[in-house]
Length: 314
Length: 278
Image (tube, rainbow over all chains, first blue to last red; front, side, top):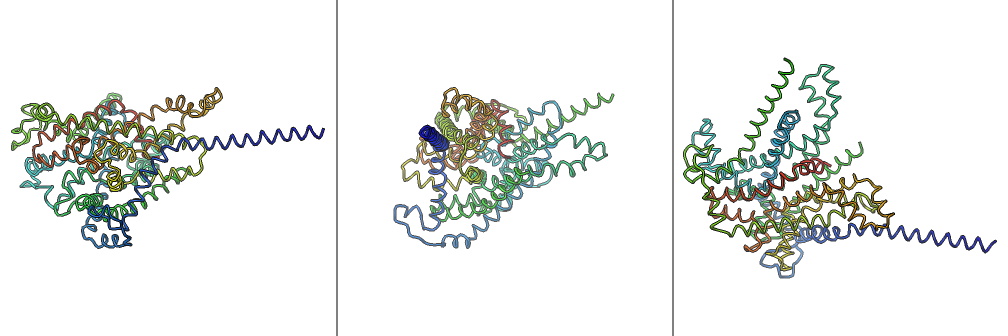
């Protein structure tokens, strides 16, 4: 009797143990799925970001890249903060991002409201508009460079014809207009993105709410401000945060259209970092600008994460 | 009467939509027509909105007489395809695990991916330059493919996740009971079902890499692996006002994008709407 219980107990222990083992093996197996991608991201994403941070405390240039580096503390950060061109690029970045977001969001919203109506050919046109967003920025930059050209550019032709100008402006080589020309090009790229995201948001709104509002006698404008905007709030906030991040890092347009000039009048932070690192070959200062940009973007990203979490909890 | 008015109204909306679409896409039209106008038409004192004379001199000059550009085109195809495959290969099991399997720190991983998908590419380009020059991988497809894949991988993982979550769980369990291990179940059952997601993410990765300028600018110094975007950039520098040729090269660079877009339109629009907001 006793012996039998012992045996059965023993057997039970064995099966439990093997089950545990099985479970552990299984959960270890789970990690195999993320192993290749995880190793890749550690090697090519986490390590470079760390390396970028490390060289901000050194004095790494193309000339001393093979030598042993010494620690210089926060010297680079002080240098950058005192640099007038850095402060100008920061200001330009804020202007660039602010104006781009404002105009691409409002125009994108207008397009979205319009394309939310049902009419023949809607899908085709929506898709066609999206092409503007898919074209590589190098090409858009080249194209707008041609349209903004001082001689024979279509924008000067148009403004002269309308009587807005009485002589052509050299938009891209004038320090008052260069930044704004790149902003206009970037707004054109951003409108379709804003439109598609807002349109998706609009299409998920419950139709009954609008029916009820109509019955209560609310007009289109009231419906927009008291129903559409409040219901769209999560989409709008996320879109604005994403838009800020995507616009802040625009580089190609600036490089092609103005090269940051004239006299840095259209230099934004990513462009200045590029110039520091690959024109002046001062890697440490370039990396320092990168790190400051990263700090700013992390702040924005934290707001984004907070919004996503809030949305998921609802 | 009322319904007639409604129909009219609908067509009126279409007319306005067509007009605003045409105005919005005018730059693209201007690119294509500039490329097929003779120089006299481009530099005329009154702009020719509709070209008076059509010629393909710029295409002949840049693609037939000078065949170098075909190599840049091919380089772009290799880089974009390579980074698309690399991204999908690593991102899909990762994303599947985040969607379905028990992992410690899953929330942290998702948060990390959300943050790093927003990194400016210059932030990676600088360390990549130093890293790849130390590894003697400058002017090599491998470094360009890795760089582009790194940039699109976090995005790919995040966008694929909802696709994996929407696949019914019973299917994999049934496959495991039938004797598949979880890797074969993933490979043979789950992946084929996630095809729409893979198409969405694949097209985005391809387009990102196709349009990349910065990585290619920094990681290539000679013509052997130079993609079309860098060629266009150097072209702008060399032939600043040869708008005819510039627009012809730009038009050819856009064609693959239009083709991909037409083929995968549904996936791209859907992916954009679901992926970037969530």
